[in-house]
Length: 351
Image (cartoon, rainbow, N blue to C red; front, side, top):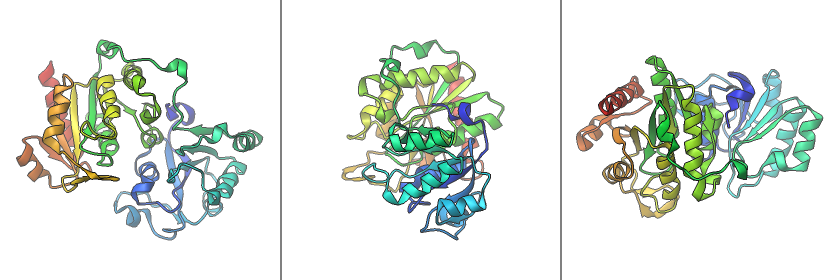
């Protein structure tokens, strides 16, 4: 899915982040507010943080200065020019909360397209699809997997592209792979590269990836083929393709997805995202994090790529001394540029 083709860029948008803005559960909303090249946030809906500023809630000085309000109706009063409602939270259990129904209905009646990251597909529900038709708006369910006839196994055809591929892997879930991918893509563009990127999760699709599919909704046999097709598509118009990874190769629950992304993208260089203070896996307390060295060894053993650097939430100097790899926090000034320099060196070494 490429939302750029449906919306262009900088579309005035409302972001529904009810109860989760600034939290891990609102990472899609947080990512859209901070990074989207498609959706320009004009107001955020979250009754728990209403009245606060995004800068304070997210702890990011460069967060957009837009209001946080209690309801979509309030948001539409403040930003009547809004054309899209982004549902940026996927509640536990996957269902649409009853409390959100009126908010979404109000947005549709006011002419807003709906971009949903919910596990349930609004576009397949008669109530929502008929309401959208009545008001001539569109519903985009970004978690919806490709049609069966679009699925195939990987066949190595990604080897035929002329572009170079950079994959962001990690030592666990929720360690910044998508953020790192976006920041590296931006650093490449700033350095004059003709860069594109591929998303493998719903947040990346909403942020504005040139191609994206939520790979954890794809049957296991077809993960590599789906990723391969996305990389090939983006490579047609770009000289370097950045790919967002998922989970980690050492994660007992999700490693099959990670390996599918690695083999489907077949990268020329890899960046590892890591939180050095994490010892237990997110949501899996009985599973420990194996760390940089084991993840690096596996990534290099299972592909032809080398790990070029570490995207860290810890002290970059300590990480660099410990692992002998260029390390940076992509939110630090010039952090992404430093990592991209390491990627350039790794790519040049392959020529």
